[in-house]
Length: 284
Image (cartoon, rainbow, N blue to C red; front, top):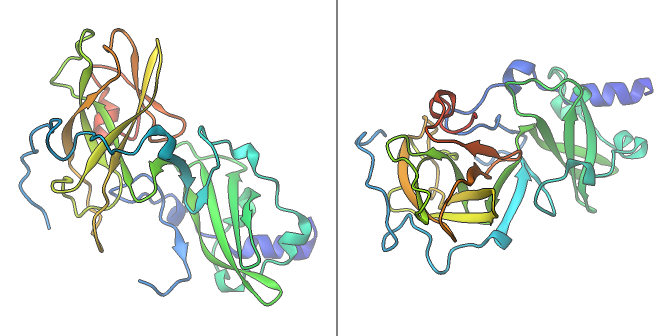
């Protein structure tokens, strides 16, 4: 790699500490952006939702075909997400990147291998895989650029995890309800869920919560819980858990329940592990 490219790649950087800071109400490190755009309630959890009230999947719920995988500003074409589907960033493309606006940051760009997720006349999106992954941090990165003259100028960048949701929806992590042992003969399971996006530290009461069975076979049931996002701005204290009952397509039997809102997905045993409850469903 020539000196010019090294200087270009190093200039976009973020400090490691800043990138490993995880938002309190989600697992993804905040995205840095060059854009100028811009209270606690009752601790008692709401009752588990039933089929006639918001929070239970309805007839017009999003289906598995509506689910998409994203990582920061990057969208994957298929499920499961395949990071190897993106071509590597070429030398000519790297030479067109002007990172002056990010000057003074620590090594962000240089510690990742970069791949072209999408490119148009006006926008460039890159997907990053770190040289040395940090076990406790988000495993990937994304960076977006706008065309200015002959150069690509960064508009946002940061670390990310692959997340599964649907257009216009956020998602929630979950564990099996520790107080309700699953019944192998039942076609319904009880879970405790945590909304991922910022929601002012409130449960999604008054907003739709729709579980989607991504797939089920003889051994596993993969579930994604979609949550209608908060309208307008929201603060980011840790979101409390809320109970939810999810309808399956067949009796549970001895099949494993899997939270497929992240990739790789997380198996959810009963009783749930202490780490999964302490991490708001983020850990195994």
